[in-house]
Image 1 (tube, helix red, strand yellow):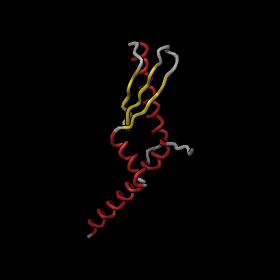
Image 2: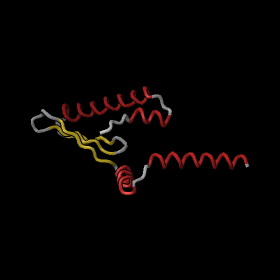
Image 3: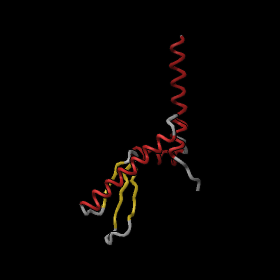
Image 4: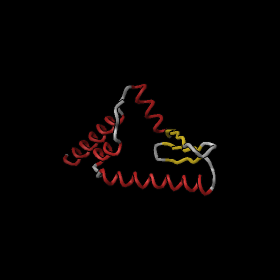
Length: 113
């Protein structure tokens, strides 16, 4: 299995410095931990659901309060993109980059004409 570093890939694609993305991810982790504290410790519940932008992260605490389990449910758009990638054998990222580049070239051409 190939390991992919999403934050480094996003940094390369967006030119956002990777350290800023790691800072954002660290803040997100702390926010999730705060929710876990609020729901599990203070409210004594055994589950929490976080919308993380590409789907829902569900954290469950077992009845003995000893083990956490995790589930991820992609949102409809992400699920559609995953299915399209697999059924059509297409690379959505490459298509998006090529389309963006094409639009920029056409826009520049229109300005010059």
